[in-house]
Amino acid sequence: MSLLILELNMKAVSDRINKLSESQTIAMAKRSRELQAEGKDIISLSLGEPDFNTPDIIKEAAKQAIDDNYSTYTPVSGYLDLREAIAKKFKRDNNLTYTPNQIVASTGAKQSIANVVLSLVNPGDEVILPAPYWVSYYEIIKMADGVPVVIDTNIESDFKITAQQLKGAMTANTKLMIFSSPCNPTGSIYSKSELESLAGIIASKEDFYVIADEIYVHINFVGGHESLAQFDSIYDKVITINGVSKGFAMTGWRLGYIGAAEWIAKACDKIQGQFTSGTCSITQRAVIAAMEIDPKTSEVTSMKDAFKERRDYMINRLNVIEGVVINQPEGAFYVFPNIKALFGKSWEGGKIQTATDLSMYLLEKAEVALVTGEAFGSPECIRISYASSLEVLKEAMDRVEKALKELN
Image (cartoon, rainbow, N blue to C red; front, side):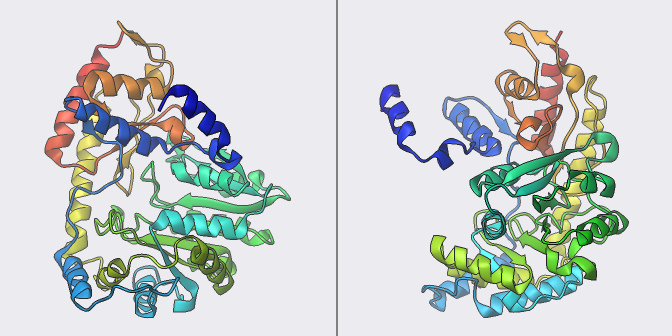
């Protein structure tokens, strides 16, 4: 297709598509694959994808579902026994009480979030985003014609907002907040006292809701997880998001879910019924088996222990690189170093002026793919995924350290 025809076709697409940005994590992964196809030895630390296989007990449940002919349309919100299993998981792991009617299973947590935003946000409604935020939050808000309102944080505060910051960001048009704990991209985790402080502000505003993204709930290095919805005063205001991609190494299976007030769940069911209907029947049967796995068992803890070992390795490597400032993330599988001190440095091919420049320099020079912090609302940082083996991480960090030493 010629460039002219492509430009003409782009003018024909909707304004909604034209204002939507491509996910920079997906874009970097795509660029990595292109370079690999050209014969380049690219190490990709850009995607949040565990390098483990799905536990056998889950795979066996999927095989059994095929043999049992689970091959027809499912209820839009998911099989009843799946939603019952999710409800039991919420109670066991989070001490949250949801009935099956308050749960909607979707094709990944990303769809779950989009369903909620489209169910609650009208054009012009403001949606608070503590930064750094996951890249898709911002674009989903734009797709709903909402207005993102960013609250900046920094590495000194472990990238967490305070109740005072939340209160200061609120206006008469504020409708929603979206945040994650454990956080993508920072790995930060909110404590119970920090969440309780936020809950007091959330409760004070009528018609205000919060999406609490807990997709990394099982990758927690500091003990038990604390859910925002645990506080009775805001239980009906919180939509708890989770899924199986991260904790159970099921990224390709595509199932996420919400726990929410029943009227919100019904709204999400209505939207989903027009977009995708129910998610894959075989995946649903497999996820029942996943929900029955106690997170204290080896299927989950062995992966978490490996991630913690990798985190510690990455922190040790980054701590000795001049110009890189790193904190200690408490969960997920990312480090989010501040690299502002490297701005202004140069090499024979150009100058580092932004985090994006640095990311592209490392891709071309070190053949290591990372993601610019600009994608997450933090332009002084970069995100590095350590969801790869220690062997891969060692090679990647050797390359990165060498390339950074060559900057003047």
